[in-house]
Amino acid sequence: MVKCWDLETNKVIRHYHGHLSGVYALAIHPTLDVLVTSGRDATARVWDMRTKQAVHTLSGHTGTVSAVKCQEADPQVITTSMDSTVRLWDLAAGKTMTRLTHHKKSVRAMALHPTEFTFATASPDNIKQWKCPEGQFMRNFEGPEGVTGGGGIVNAMAVNADNVMFTGADNGAMGFWDWKSGHQFQRLDSLVQPGSLDSEAGIFCAEFDKTGLRLITGEADKTIKIWKEDDQATPETHPLDWKPSLMRKRY
Image (cartoon, rainbow, N blue to C red; front, side):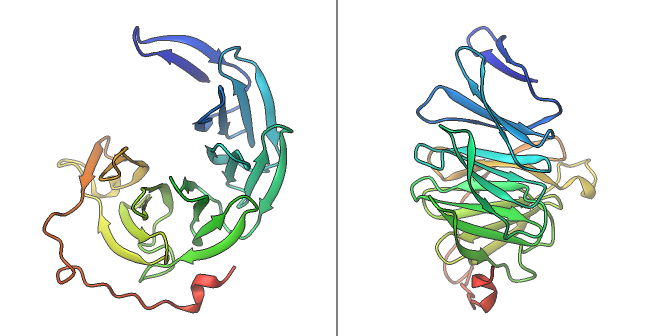
């Protein structure tokens, strides 16, 4: 189900009916009155917000569509799927503009850069950065131990305007990356709520707030955590150890 809520009265005022299975992701278009939802029926559906009509069904993926994002300029809709592909869509025609097949495993998370015309996608094999509008491959993000850094499956990504990218994995690994170079400059492990099991350290969703200084994560131990920058951190306490390898440029 996809529902629209009135926040004044806390009531459901609209239903968008049409998905055949669970809905995994939703994105609201920044300028048009449309929203895009995607899910386990391997489609992304474009809805007219006001009339509740299904404008397009964006079909083509062969697996669960795990993430969807909207932006003002073409490609206005980008989807990532468990079939290990990323698709850039022409919203007016409802057709695929580009299909990116670089990932080898299911792509579970995506983040659009707030100011640049670029985006990144995360899969267990790699985190890759792309350039819009044509979806040109830019680089792999590379962590110290293994490629995705931390060994978990990345479920959540977020980027702020200061070029800091965050990735959250299903084992509680938190990676902080430099958007420009693809270097993982910090790695933390999420703290489980007292009384929870260590196996409940998992991050399902993450978002920076408007300022970009606070990171909000939703986790497997039923908590929502808010993180801030370390005031005490200096270049001496957190030395930069960046040794780029050839892995960065490999498709």
